[in-house]
Length: 325
Image (cartoon, rainbow, N blue to C red; front, side, top):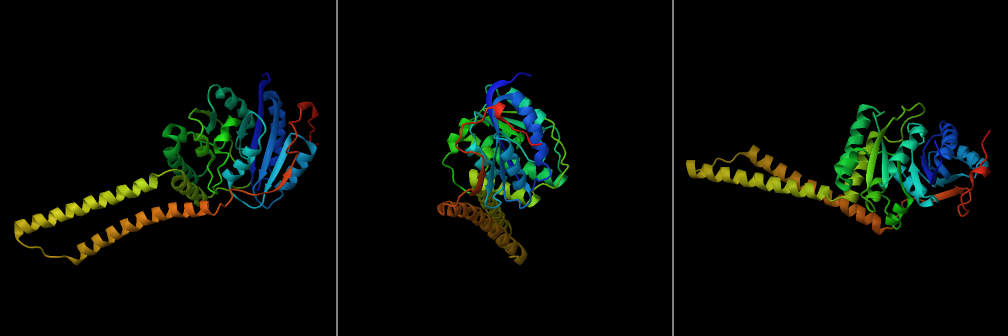
């Protein structure tokens, strides 16, 4: 394979990946010189409180193409990605996980598909998670469908490549609730996806629990779409219609039989149903108000505590690359 006339920034959010980082690093420095004329590897350590930062420090001191950014605390995968994306210096950005589930050998497949597209996802041939995790992932993709469209949302993956210029569309984004996939839709509709092999996890456990995935889906729906508000309106309309039907039944019974025998159970049920619908609508409105409150506080999406590598220097040539022994 010949080297393509592209430069590539590889952004990797790191969370408790001490056992896999060096393996991933060696795979990357073996493959990237074949794919691009110049490259950099940006590790963003997301407050995992293990030895990952020590590994990153060692790699960055030995290789000028490696850069490290350490978050002050755990902010989450998408916030860590945003840090690395804003720090990238090359024409294309590739994002991938730190757990070796995204094969380095498949990077060329994503780059080959880019062509006239702006974003290419490496969708897994088969999900490598448990049943509950897969269900939560599908829930997240349903939430994304409102912002991205169903076809694109079905193929969303953390293994993605896109043009660096797209970040200009969300350069001023400061909300603590971050979804890289939604932010990319702000500047392009040219999405594509290819099916690639994803490896099973061999070390550690995923930082994404079922609770975190559900919370992420809720943040997507309330932070980037009006779907919940529309749903609350539909629920309200449905119960109003239900109430009108009940009123019609009562009036019809009165006209036919000349009287109505009130029933405590039916009245209590109706009160509970309508009260529940009102509380549901208020809860949805409350979620939106909470997000407006957090944004009014100007709470940052991240805070970088430490950096490694010359952040202002021009990218190093491949000839200057050192390899960790």
